[in-house]
Length: 121
Image 1 (spheres, one colour):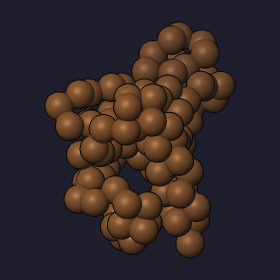
Image 2: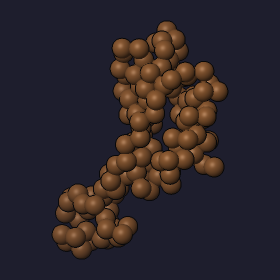
Image 3: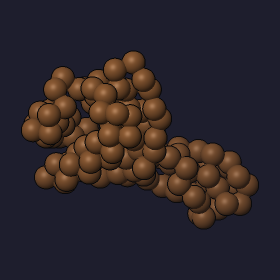
Image 4: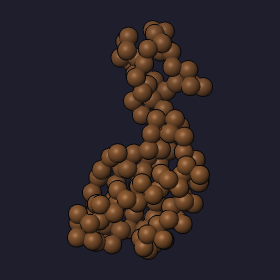
């Protein structure tokens, strides 16, 4: 399961943040997941429950925010949500686009006791 490996990496990154903040208790982690990330949120949540307990993270929760796929046209700079993964600009018809969001997993926020620290991967 790909999600297990992803959660292991996430826990390692969060562990570095916890250490950098004096080992404060981890309360919550928030990630953003897009449709092109190849991640099943339910499987990621299940992997978190298992692996965070093994890592000694206690009752720390994982919040998964599913974000839409957004692309930007290289021709007219319009941002749009590709329908059925069709990346042709609906405004000018140019097929050359850049993905703005929705193609990965982003560590958005780590909450330690009452301290919030944002980060991204």
